[in-house]
Length: 326
Image 1 (tube, rainbow, N blue to C red):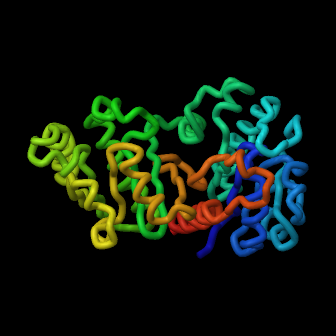
Image 2: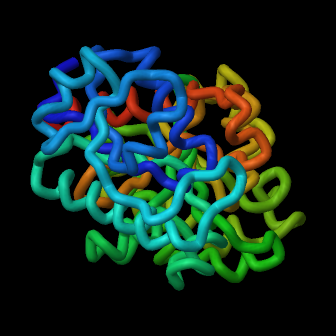
Image 3: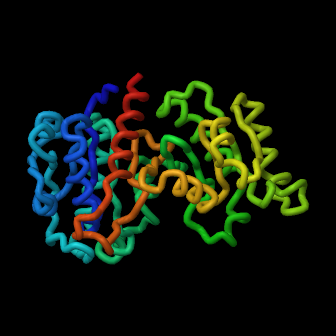
Protein backbone atom coordinates (compact mmCIF):
# COMPACT_ATOMS: atom_id res chain seq x y z
CA UNK A 1 0.00 0.00 0.00
CA UNK A 2 1.51 3.30 -1.13
CA UNK A 3 0.23 6.53 0.42
CA UNK A 4 1.38 9.59 -1.55
CA UNK A 5 1.46 11.94 1.44
CA UNK A 6 1.20 11.57 5.22
CA UNK A 7 -2.11 11.61 7.07
CA UNK A 8 -3.03 14.81 8.90
CA UNK A 9 -4.55 14.40 12.37
CA UNK A 10 -6.41 17.25 14.06
CA UNK A 11 -5.91 17.01 17.83
CA UNK A 12 -9.55 17.54 18.79
CA UNK A 13 -10.30 18.32 22.43
CA UNK A 14 -6.90 18.26 24.20
CA UNK A 15 -8.49 17.66 27.61
CA UNK A 16 -9.85 14.33 26.34
CA UNK A 17 -8.04 11.15 25.36
CA UNK A 18 -6.95 12.45 21.95
CA UNK A 19 -3.35 13.33 22.86
CA UNK A 20 -2.88 10.01 24.68
CA UNK A 21 -4.14 7.83 21.84
CA UNK A 22 -2.13 9.86 19.31
CA UNK A 23 1.04 9.02 21.23
CA UNK A 24 0.01 5.38 21.62
CA UNK A 25 -0.75 5.14 17.90
CA UNK A 26 2.74 6.37 17.03
CA UNK A 27 4.21 3.90 19.53
CA UNK A 28 2.33 1.12 17.76
CA UNK A 29 2.86 2.24 14.17
CA UNK A 30 6.15 4.12 14.19
CA UNK A 31 7.14 5.09 10.67
CA UNK A 32 5.12 2.25 9.08
CA UNK A 33 2.14 4.56 8.52
CA UNK A 34 3.34 8.18 8.69
CA UNK A 35 0.94 10.66 10.26
CA UNK A 36 1.38 14.02 11.91
CA UNK A 37 -0.69 15.71 14.59
CA UNK A 38 -1.85 19.31 14.31
CA UNK A 39 -1.78 20.41 17.94
CA UNK A 40 0.13 22.09 20.72
CA UNK A 41 3.52 20.53 21.41
CA UNK A 42 3.04 21.05 25.15
CA UNK A 43 -0.22 19.09 25.16
CA UNK A 44 1.47 16.06 23.58
CA UNK A 45 4.73 16.11 25.52
CA UNK A 46 3.24 14.75 28.74
CA UNK A 47 2.75 11.13 27.66
CA UNK A 48 6.28 9.75 27.82
CA UNK A 49 7.07 9.48 24.12
CA UNK A 50 9.45 11.57 22.02
CA UNK A 51 7.76 14.44 20.18
CA UNK A 52 9.29 15.80 16.98
CA UNK A 53 8.25 19.26 15.79
CA UNK A 54 7.91 19.54 12.03
CA UNK A 55 7.55 22.66 9.93
CA UNK A 56 5.78 21.01 6.98
CA UNK A 57 3.95 17.73 6.32
CA UNK A 58 6.68 16.57 3.94
CA UNK A 59 8.98 16.10 6.96
CA UNK A 60 6.65 13.53 8.55
CA UNK A 61 8.22 10.30 7.31
CA UNK A 62 11.69 11.15 8.59
CA UNK A 63 10.36 12.56 11.86
CA UNK A 64 8.22 9.47 12.50
CA UNK A 65 11.36 7.35 12.81
CA UNK A 66 12.34 9.42 15.86
CA UNK A 67 9.07 10.36 17.52
CA UNK A 68 5.50 11.54 17.04
CA UNK A 69 5.54 14.26 14.34
CA UNK A 70 3.67 17.39 15.43
CA UNK A 71 2.82 20.42 13.32
CA UNK A 72 2.56 22.99 16.08
CA UNK A 73 -0.76 24.77 16.58
CA UNK A 74 -0.62 27.09 19.54
CA UNK A 75 -3.34 26.69 22.17
CA UNK A 76 -3.74 29.50 24.71
CA UNK A 77 -4.50 27.30 27.73
CA UNK A 78 -2.97 24.12 29.15
CA UNK A 79 -4.71 20.78 28.67
CA UNK A 80 -6.09 19.56 32.00
CA UNK A 81 -7.41 16.02 31.69
CA UNK A 82 -11.20 15.90 31.83
CA UNK A 83 -11.59 19.68 32.04
CA UNK A 84 -12.04 21.37 28.65
CA UNK A 85 -10.93 25.01 28.66
CA UNK A 86 -13.20 27.44 26.77
CA UNK A 87 -10.09 29.42 25.83
CA UNK A 88 -8.91 26.49 23.70
CA UNK A 89 -12.10 26.15 21.66
CA UNK A 90 -11.04 28.42 18.79
CA UNK A 91 -7.72 26.58 18.48
CA UNK A 92 -9.49 23.21 18.31
CA UNK A 93 -11.59 24.52 15.41
CA UNK A 94 -8.54 26.09 13.74
CA UNK A 95 -6.67 22.75 13.85
CA UNK A 96 -9.51 21.08 11.93
CA UNK A 97 -9.60 23.85 9.33
CA UNK A 98 -5.80 23.66 8.96
CA UNK A 99 -6.03 19.92 8.36
CA UNK A 100 -8.66 20.43 5.66
CA UNK A 101 -6.46 23.04 4.00
CA UNK A 102 -3.44 20.72 3.97
CA UNK A 103 -5.43 17.83 2.51
CA UNK A 104 -7.03 20.08 -0.08
CA UNK A 105 -3.60 21.32 -1.18
CA UNK A 106 -2.26 17.77 -1.44
CA UNK A 107 0.24 18.10 1.42
CA UNK A 108 -1.65 15.38 3.29
CA UNK A 109 -3.39 12.35 1.80
CA UNK A 110 -6.28 12.29 4.27
CA UNK A 111 -7.60 13.87 7.45
CA UNK A 112 -8.22 11.80 10.56
CA UNK A 113 -9.93 13.76 13.30
CA UNK A 114 -9.59 13.09 17.01
CA UNK A 115 -12.74 13.62 19.09
CA UNK A 116 -14.12 17.06 19.89
CA UNK A 117 -16.51 18.16 22.61
CA UNK A 118 -19.29 20.09 20.91
CA UNK A 119 -20.51 21.70 24.13
CA UNK A 120 -17.04 23.11 24.86
CA UNK A 121 -16.71 24.46 21.31
CA UNK A 122 -20.11 26.10 21.42
CA UNK A 123 -19.48 27.70 24.81
CA UNK A 124 -15.92 28.77 24.02
CA UNK A 125 -16.14 29.78 20.36
CA UNK A 126 -19.81 29.85 19.37
CA UNK A 127 -19.38 26.72 17.23
CA UNK A 128 -22.54 26.65 15.13
CA UNK A 129 -22.38 23.08 13.78
CA UNK A 130 -23.85 19.85 15.23
CA UNK A 131 -20.47 18.14 14.89
CA UNK A 132 -17.36 17.43 12.87
CA UNK A 133 -19.24 16.13 9.84
CA UNK A 134 -21.32 19.23 9.29
CA UNK A 135 -18.33 21.54 9.83
CA UNK A 136 -16.23 19.62 7.32
CA UNK A 137 -19.06 19.77 4.79
CA UNK A 138 -19.23 23.54 5.36
CA UNK A 139 -15.48 23.93 4.80
CA UNK A 140 -15.72 21.87 1.61
CA UNK A 141 -18.78 23.73 0.34
CA UNK A 142 -20.73 20.46 0.15
CA UNK A 143 -24.43 20.20 0.97
CA UNK A 144 -24.93 16.44 1.22
CA UNK A 145 -22.52 14.12 3.02
CA UNK A 146 -23.01 10.68 4.53
CA UNK A 147 -21.72 9.04 7.70
CA UNK A 148 -20.43 5.50 7.33
CA UNK A 149 -19.38 3.25 10.21
CA UNK A 150 -16.92 0.63 9.05
CA UNK A 151 -14.88 -2.30 10.30
CA UNK A 152 -13.45 -5.30 8.43
CA UNK A 153 -16.72 -7.22 8.83
CA UNK A 154 -19.29 -4.51 8.09
CA UNK A 155 -19.88 -1.15 6.44
CA UNK A 156 -23.15 0.51 7.44
CA UNK A 157 -24.66 3.92 6.72
CA UNK A 158 -27.57 5.47 8.70
CA UNK A 159 -29.86 7.56 6.50
CA UNK A 160 -30.85 9.69 9.51
CA UNK A 161 -28.41 10.29 12.33
CA UNK A 162 -28.73 12.33 15.52
CA UNK A 163 -32.46 12.92 15.74
CA UNK A 164 -35.12 11.52 18.09
CA UNK A 165 -36.52 8.17 17.01
CA UNK A 166 -40.00 9.70 16.91
CA UNK A 167 -38.82 12.13 14.22
CA UNK A 168 -37.33 9.50 11.90
CA UNK A 169 -40.43 8.68 9.78
CA UNK A 170 -41.01 12.34 8.94
CA UNK A 171 -37.32 12.93 8.21
CA UNK A 172 -37.12 10.08 5.70
CA UNK A 173 -37.93 11.17 2.17
CA UNK A 174 -37.03 10.15 -1.37
CA UNK A 175 -34.38 12.86 -1.84
CA UNK A 176 -32.57 11.88 1.38
CA UNK A 177 -32.57 8.16 0.55
CA UNK A 178 -31.50 8.70 -3.05
CA UNK A 179 -28.64 10.98 -2.03
CA UNK A 180 -27.52 8.59 0.72
CA UNK A 181 -27.50 5.58 -1.60
CA UNK A 182 -25.81 7.40 -4.48
CA UNK A 183 -23.08 8.88 -2.27
CA UNK A 184 -22.47 5.48 -0.69
CA UNK A 185 -22.30 3.77 -4.08
CA UNK A 186 -19.83 6.34 -5.45
CA UNK A 187 -17.62 6.10 -2.35
CA UNK A 188 -17.51 2.31 -2.45
CA UNK A 189 -16.18 2.55 -6.00
CA UNK A 190 -13.76 5.43 -5.47
CA UNK A 191 -12.55 4.95 -1.91
CA UNK A 192 -12.92 1.21 -1.36
CA UNK A 193 -12.03 -0.01 -4.87
CA UNK A 194 -15.25 -2.00 -5.31
CA UNK A 195 -16.13 -1.72 -9.02
CA UNK A 196 -19.74 -2.94 -8.74
CA UNK A 197 -20.94 -2.35 -5.18
CA UNK A 198 -23.73 -4.44 -3.68
CA UNK A 199 -25.84 -2.38 -1.29
CA UNK A 200 -28.51 -3.78 1.03
CA UNK A 201 -31.30 -1.45 2.19
CA UNK A 202 -33.05 -1.94 5.52
CA UNK A 203 -36.71 -1.35 6.10
CA UNK A 204 -37.86 1.05 8.77
CA UNK A 205 -40.46 -1.13 10.46
CA UNK A 206 -40.32 -4.62 11.99
CA UNK A 207 -40.23 -7.28 9.26
CA UNK A 208 -39.80 -4.42 6.74
CA UNK A 209 -43.45 -3.54 7.23
CA UNK A 210 -44.70 -7.07 6.47
CA UNK A 211 -46.76 -6.03 3.48
CA UNK A 212 -48.18 -2.95 5.17
CA UNK A 213 -49.41 -4.67 8.33
CA UNK A 214 -46.61 -3.09 10.41
CA UNK A 215 -46.17 0.23 8.64
CA UNK A 216 -46.31 1.73 5.18
CA UNK A 217 -42.93 3.47 4.76
CA UNK A 218 -41.51 0.49 2.86
CA UNK A 219 -44.32 0.39 0.28
CA UNK A 220 -44.73 4.16 0.04
CA UNK A 221 -41.09 5.28 0.05
CA UNK A 222 -38.27 2.75 0.34
CA UNK A 223 -39.33 0.23 -2.32
CA UNK A 224 -39.96 2.90 -5.01
CA UNK A 225 -36.56 4.49 -4.34
CA UNK A 226 -34.84 1.11 -4.66
CA UNK A 227 -36.69 0.43 -7.93
CA UNK A 228 -35.74 3.82 -9.39
CA UNK A 229 -32.05 3.40 -8.59
CA UNK A 230 -32.00 -0.18 -9.81
CA UNK A 231 -33.26 1.18 -13.13
CA UNK A 232 -30.10 3.35 -13.21
CA UNK A 233 -27.97 0.23 -12.84
CA UNK A 234 -27.23 0.21 -9.10
CA UNK A 235 -27.06 -3.24 -7.48
CA UNK A 236 -29.51 -2.84 -4.58
CA UNK A 237 -31.49 -5.30 -2.49
CA UNK A 238 -34.28 -4.77 -0.01
CA UNK A 239 -36.01 -3.45 1.85
CA UNK A 240 -34.83 -6.09 4.29
CA UNK A 241 -36.01 -6.83 7.79
CA UNK A 242 -33.22 -5.25 9.86
CA UNK A 243 -33.16 -8.10 12.38
CA UNK A 244 -31.91 -10.53 9.71
CA UNK A 245 -29.40 -8.28 7.93
CA UNK A 246 -26.34 -8.42 10.13
CA UNK A 247 -25.45 -12.05 10.82
CA UNK A 248 -22.38 -13.36 9.03
CA UNK A 249 -24.23 -15.08 6.20
CA UNK A 250 -26.28 -11.98 5.40
CA UNK A 251 -23.23 -9.68 5.51
CA UNK A 252 -21.53 -11.83 2.89
CA UNK A 253 -24.21 -10.80 0.39
CA UNK A 254 -23.46 -7.07 0.35
CA UNK A 255 -20.61 -4.53 0.48
CA UNK A 256 -22.50 -1.95 2.54
CA UNK A 257 -25.85 -1.65 4.26
CA UNK A 258 -28.10 1.40 4.45
CA UNK A 259 -30.02 1.68 7.72
CA UNK A 260 -32.91 4.02 8.37
CA UNK A 261 -31.82 5.44 11.74
CA UNK A 262 -28.89 5.75 14.12
CA UNK A 263 -29.25 2.72 16.37
CA UNK A 264 -30.32 0.42 13.54
CA UNK A 265 -26.85 1.06 12.08
CA UNK A 266 -24.67 1.44 15.15
CA UNK A 267 -25.87 -1.47 17.29
CA UNK A 268 -24.65 -4.14 14.84
CA UNK A 269 -21.25 -2.58 14.19
CA UNK A 270 -20.59 -1.91 17.88
CA UNK A 271 -21.58 -5.49 18.63
CA UNK A 272 -19.36 -6.93 15.91
CA UNK A 273 -16.30 -4.74 16.56
CA UNK A 274 -16.75 -2.36 19.48
CA UNK A 275 -13.11 -1.21 19.68
CA UNK A 276 -12.25 -1.20 15.99
CA UNK A 277 -15.07 0.71 14.33
CA UNK A 278 -14.22 3.73 12.19
CA UNK A 279 -16.36 6.75 11.34
CA UNK A 280 -15.93 7.76 7.68
CA UNK A 281 -17.46 10.83 6.05
CA UNK A 282 -18.54 10.05 2.48
CA UNK A 283 -19.20 12.67 -0.18
CA UNK A 284 -16.38 15.07 0.71
CA UNK A 285 -13.74 15.97 -1.90
CA UNK A 286 -11.11 14.71 0.54
CA UNK A 287 -10.80 11.66 2.79
CA UNK A 288 -11.89 11.98 6.40
CA UNK A 289 -11.93 9.24 9.01
CA UNK A 290 -12.29 9.31 12.78
CA UNK A 291 -12.28 6.87 15.68
CA UNK A 292 -15.80 5.80 16.58
CA UNK A 293 -15.77 7.19 20.13
CA UNK A 294 -15.78 10.47 21.98
CA UNK A 295 -13.45 12.45 24.23
CA UNK A 296 -13.88 10.04 27.18
CA UNK A 297 -13.29 12.71 29.81
CA UNK A 298 -13.93 10.11 32.52
CA UNK A 299 -10.70 8.23 31.68
CA UNK A 300 -8.61 11.10 30.29
CA UNK A 301 -5.26 11.28 32.03
CA UNK A 302 -5.48 7.80 33.51
CA UNK A 303 -3.28 6.15 30.87
CA UNK A 304 -5.86 3.49 30.02
CA UNK A 305 -7.27 4.91 26.77
CA UNK A 306 -7.44 2.32 23.97
CA UNK A 307 -5.99 3.52 20.62
CA UNK A 308 -7.48 0.62 18.60
CA UNK A 309 -10.21 2.65 16.87
CA UNK A 310 -7.84 5.53 16.13
CA UNK A 311 -5.25 3.19 14.61
CA UNK A 312 -8.03 1.57 12.55
CA UNK A 313 -9.09 5.05 11.38
CA UNK A 314 -5.52 5.84 10.27
CA UNK A 315 -5.22 2.52 8.46
CA UNK A 316 -8.56 2.98 6.71
CA UNK A 317 -7.58 6.51 5.67
CA UNK A 318 -4.37 5.13 4.16
CA UNK A 319 -6.29 2.40 2.31
CA UNK A 320 -8.77 4.92 0.95
CA UNK A 321 -5.96 7.24 -0.16
CA UNK A 322 -4.29 4.36 -1.96
CA UNK A 323 -7.58 3.49 -3.68
CA UNK A 324 -8.06 7.08 -4.83
CA UNK A 325 -4.46 7.15 -6.04
CA UNK A 326 -5.19 4.26 -8.38
